[in-house]
Image 1 (cartoon, rainbow, N blue to C red):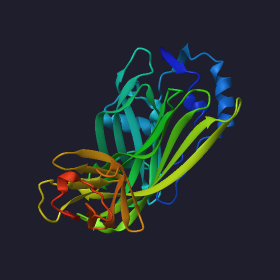
Image 2: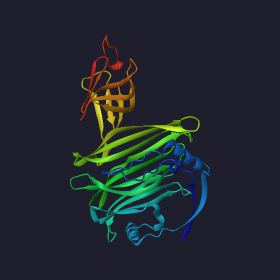
Image 3: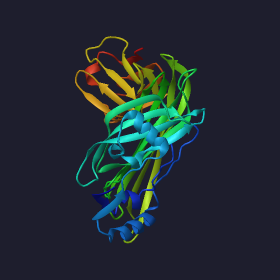
Image 4: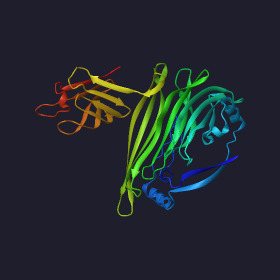
Length: 383
């Protein structure tokens, strides 16, 4: 049986012509790092693609989904008809550490717009017998995946060595998304981790972004682009019996600008930071460090560090931004002292932050005027 769908294809996707698509899995052992093409090459590629039509409606005639015998056995157990399945994203992979078991992803259609381009999917994540296709463990989530202007490009299974406990190893499901905007390119990859538990699968990490790329440019030369890559490292420390996950983050920022009348140049900077994922209340979460004043003060200064960002609050102000730790000091980027206007800095230890709040007649300054009852602000990490 054949069915005809009207599908809008974006012929001239900027992300296809400008961004090198990084579809390498983010694994513990390695990561694939891709940075933008040189500006001069990029401009040439975009100029070539810009001569094409932005959108083109094409009649696509495709065969109705006919599952393989292996998938058909699984659908029968789930009582799912082939017409319900979004077959483009069916994937399967034998577990290398348990070859009698195969991970299978079966998305079913929750909603589908008339244009065939926007849709939402239910997801079945399964572990089945590699020979008989009998379902061993199952995870189901309704309306879990959505695709439109930011569309789902790929679904994959990650079987890197995610040893989350002494006797449990997780596997990952990755989704790769790509944007349709040429002046605002975007793509990202997310990772969810699952463990096997009797007859069901437990999701212990939910859609954690392991790669992202976004930017803005004038479609000619001038712009800014940010590329973030993350690597997982299983840590020796445990939280609630699960190993912590150290995440190494590398953020590359590239600025492009005009050089002369007919040329472009670029400036690239890279920053490295870390995140810590700890298991709590049934799943992994980014660990937040909260620092409060050791001695009571009317200003009620509190600092929260999460990933490479800080969130600072007193009785008179709230501020957030990125922070930098180097050589035993911490700099709160974008947060200015009251007098003179320079970025706030302090001494940094794992469990303590110390900020000198004001100086003397030889070196006058004040950091937080509302905390003028204390010369040194000692902030301790809350356990």
